[in-house]
Length: 443
Ligand code: HSE
Picture 1: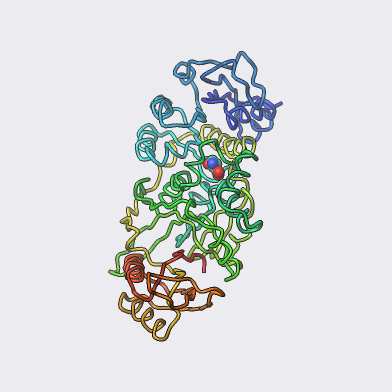
Picture 2: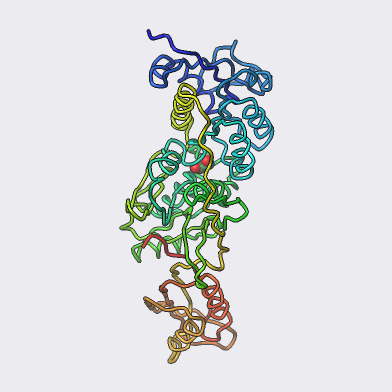
């Protein structure tokens, strides 16, 4: 066996990912050392409760409740505790002592990323975070290194497995949202409190991280526009299928030039209609995928497991080998690049396509009245289909005219113009209700 310099690795957290990292590191230590060119000695694992059950066995003598002491003298610290504190303080301590840090903590990066990157840069250390977005899928290193010579136009990501599972069940089995969520909970995809997933908070954190990296611009979490999937109905999913679309919760990071000619970054999360022919439409179950549109490379897609203990441990161990190689070579870490510093465009200035479903009065002049409303707000109609309900739905008292359903697809329009159009439709005397407004992405 080759004699390598030994690097001391401290692990903070032994939950589903942390326990697998410890176990794989112990089991494959020699192989990883050969790849890294340095011995990787797991010097300890900081946990809250030494006696707690774990998904993989960790030797008792490695466990400690004293994270601060464990960090002292470590060359590489792996933070997998989750949450903002004490993770933030411990990472800052580790960086300030010159250790490289690996984290899978998306909430922390999305909230305190600039502070942590600054601390790393000050001491020439490096912060690695492949596991923070889309679990096992390599996406951080491709964005940071492999595609760094290109110019990214847009990222469309399915970065939350729970919501993809739910929407996929609604699409393939015709389940309601409640039924699909119940199945996701039974199968262990959804947490007891599913709020972070179904309201889009988890996806928004990942969007902030991806957009910052892709556009060399700090994108704060509160600049990410967010809508969850809780308002998606079985009827919307069904009519999307009939129209050749599938509803997906998308993380969208886009370089945009708005109506005033300002170039900026848009970061947003919402359920959108994706054409069935788009590669993201084929992402089923709880899988994740990140679709990148780059100027020179064209379209790229990264697909795989977005969660899971051993799967995410793979991303952490990849970072560990990278960090160890860096230690062997020496020199400062690569600082996070935010040089572009593009303005972050608010949602009102986003330009995209829409599909609007209306229940209208079925009588002469209605189509013309609706078309006038769209044109008055500068929104151009691309497609229109009408179906007359078998049984007419009564409108306001005294209103006995039959109803028809109109599905209107628009050309690209600004969110502000579209919102004004929808407000006008809602108050129009020929519209009984605006039943659905969904954005169309990926076409
Ligand atoms: N809860 C997330 C998901 C995994 O459902 O994809 C962790 O980010």
